[in-house]
Length: 513
Ligand code: AHR
Picture 1 (cartoon, rainbow, N blue to C red):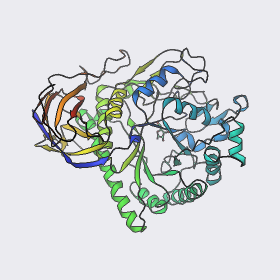
Picture 2 (tube, protein in one colour; picture 1 turned 135 degrees about the horizontal axis):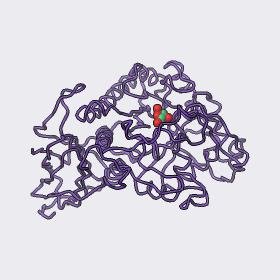
Picture 3 (spheres, helix red, strand yellow; picture 1 turned 90 degrees about the vertical axis):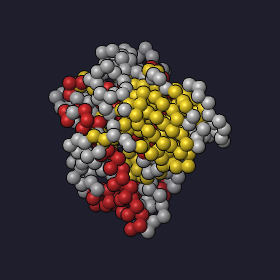
Picture 4 (cartoon, helix red, strand yellow; picture 1 turned 90 degrees about the horizontal axis):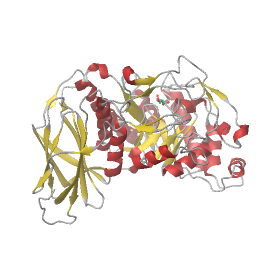
């Protein structure tokens, strides 16, 4: 089956913010301890950071990392995690019913993020704490010196302020599972007052208020409307979270769930438009998708121990191996983010290590990379500049329980800022058919196909757990350029990337591959 796509340099959909390729670290299970931090590990540096993990994170192209939670933050005392390690208290941690040693805290995270080449995004506790605590943390991080908390930071050996730019006002406060869960009115008011005070202390920061924690929350979109109304002009982003499972629905329905995510963004875009008018504000407001991912099937779970064995240090929680099928939904979720690049400016894949993760670690041993790692890496490295508004001609669709019209090929095209490269990312949702992609680049003057890479597997249930790198990017077959049209074959249930160099400023195409 042939799928025709038409991109034109004149039609742009949105500018890609580099922070769309962010990730998330939470004190949960083995994400921090034996994930990124393991003193004594053969690859650990003098600060206890695993070198094998740092190298994989850099290679993955992670631009920013949100920390320290997640549900964890809603009962966290940040001061427990700073200062001399020997004096840090052990605490019961209620989100995951673990024991937190506080061996790793704020300053360790900031050092780790610098080594990973990622910007920090910090979350404040609006569960058990409030305005005062958020201000103290901000003062510790961003104030120069000469005040109690800035001098406390300096006494911990950090002379220069961190000047952290992006701050999340709590986590999933709409969720009944959240410690200190609030009604929309309670949260919106607290977020507005906390945000106002934080910007008084540091007007250069950007704030993220909690929107809905998933698209099927009964309170969505009423929660989002209430929060937007109260924080408009104070916060800069509304946070959305979204995870999908549901493999038991079957592949067609499972893969269609990215359409729900697209509708979620569109609903919030409309809510933002309404609230901009209602509040008579000129201020921009964007979406921060500050947690997103796929939950794998229970049979691919490596351990779900937290309910059975509480009060352990860094227990194994929800560690899972991703199948090829999971990987395709992950890819379509990332494409949904790109399609909404005009309104979504931050997106944090969750989590970075060990739990719904890209990178899996063995304590005292090596790492292995999930197939989703490669999707993230390919997109983070090559989706730059603008998203092109691309027309698909006679796209075949299928119907499933939740959606009448699911495109068989999910796709996004990007154009680098300097105009010298265009990239097409695509997911073939068909379980049987190879799709022949014919991508016409009108007025873009394609010169050469630089790369055609495919991620696929002989079995949709295959993972990289027992055979590391069984699923990894491989060169695709038969890509060719004729005139201004690139052609390539996209195998069933695969993700692919087609990179094309362009003659910047006009000129003749040739047919080299
Ligand atoms: O798996 C991570 C958890 O999922 C986060 O703590 C929470 O914000 C979300 O519900």
